[in-house]
Image (cartoon, rainbow, N blue to C red; front, side, top):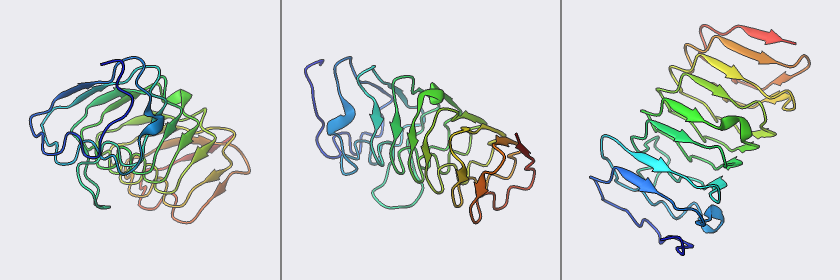
Length: 193
């Protein structure tokens, strides 16, 4: 319904067979909060979400399937973030089947733990981001390459911790690398330009 302007707390809770959610044009994400948690216990083996141009912010914990800090998310395999400018804390935390995120080059804010534990994600382009939080891509165990923004001159704490196959990232000369930013990144090669 295009007239729907908000969602109740845990609106799809325990909908274990839920596989496809389409937010229609006109639905705005600005009224959603971290307590919305729409997909708690939505454990379907496949999950698809379509976002309209009016959905510009992925709220904190939006795709989490639990209410705690344990990394667990819906079984989404791909998502188009073309119209999204901000991804909240824990938004995709634990979405272990997420392999493809298109439209990331338009993101300006990626908050803490946003993509933590997205174990199937292999490449990210965050070249337009102005802010990237701690642990943003921690434990993305198949992440191999990152296009880092030239305007972000600090790699946050634990940002890529546990990204054991990450081998390519190009950062600007003079960029500060905070504590444990690349902890357990056994294949990393930093390019400074």
